[in-house]
Amino acid sequence: MLLFTCSNAYCANEYITEELLNTPQENEVTLSGDDDTLIDGVNQDGEILNISDTSSDEDLDDNVEEEFKVFDLMGKDESVSEEHPFSKILKTEISRTDIPSYLLKDYLTFKYKKSPVSETQYYASYQGSISSLFKHHNYSTEYDNLNTDIGVLGKFKNPNYNFKFHLKPVPVKGTSYLDRFFGDIYVVNSQIPNHKIIAGFSRVQTGIEGGVSPYILPFVTRSQIGRNFGNTRSLGLKIVGNYNYADYSVAYGSSGRSLLSGMPGTEFTGWLNLKPFGSKDGKYGKLTIGGGISTGHNRRNYTVGSVYVGYKYKKLWTNFEAAIADGYNGGAGMKSNKATGYAFTAGWKFTPKFQLIGRVDQFDPNRDISHDLKREYTIGLNWFIKGQALKVVLNYVFCHNQNTRNSSKIILATQVML
Image (cartoon, rainbow, N blue to C red; front, side, top):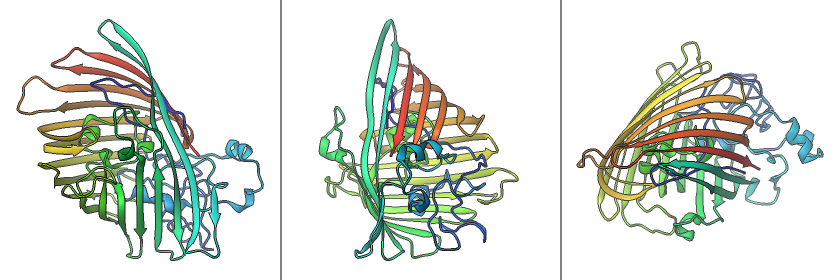
């Protein structure tokens, strides 16, 4: 997928946008529906439905289980199997943007009769960005390859088991190639009602934004607490539960941040969301109140605590997330600093395809040092051409730093998921 982004020393590169609005649309999938719709993406006849087959008022963002909902949407629409892919893409309308969707899903999904695997869906995704950076009297333009992924989603013959395997084959400057080469590699068991057990290499739920896929983020870059404290994977065991008024995630595993890092130490991560209005009744909107902790040892001890409040009502979405750390082991690497920060975000969806969004973001990298705050003010426009499968993002970021000069940047990003 084509994605264009900007980066500098104080406003780090990250990834793309999540539609965090609850806007009822046609062509949305209901993942836990009424008697005449579907349950877990399956209709009354037992058929797995396509992402544009049904409508729903339910919105799954802020949910710690959202990453695994993609398995419920596997399966191709057999009625269009003979249609030319380009023609099918032009006709497809995808209004749901809280989970990834794929343009060639129907053509890259295969079923097997004589195999322990019953179905696979192959995919490829690309993010890149181009940015204009204004710093002092200097101006520069940079292109960044943010993410290039190839992978496969699969279902075993046993309906309680799914798996995901994905690789990141394009090297990123300044990082170890093998450390970044392996992405999500895990098996999911759904045998316990309302629960999923995940074993393998998967994302760590350090905060809400720090634990979500880069392909559904609200901006090109994560917030400063999201990219410093979160945006990591770990090898271990995770349990997620999802109920009408609460969902949670607990995980235990390695504090290493690559599949090849072994066991430099252990880590525990826990997160709990409370949903006072329930998850299906939109009369009063959707309110989510959450919090969690991530603690472990990797050469030194570290602990990060986070709180989150999110509210959605019709076209409005807003949230606030704050975190405090006594050492952290996130996307910025292992740090012993006592750091803290917060991010406040608000968005408005004018139409199913256009979203205006803004964020105020502050980070204190070391509470023992005064006058070192970093603030970012971001305003963005998201154009969901085909949901998250084909998207264009425009961000303006003003970086205000207490101990260095300020800077600004304009980021144009595109995303394609096949």
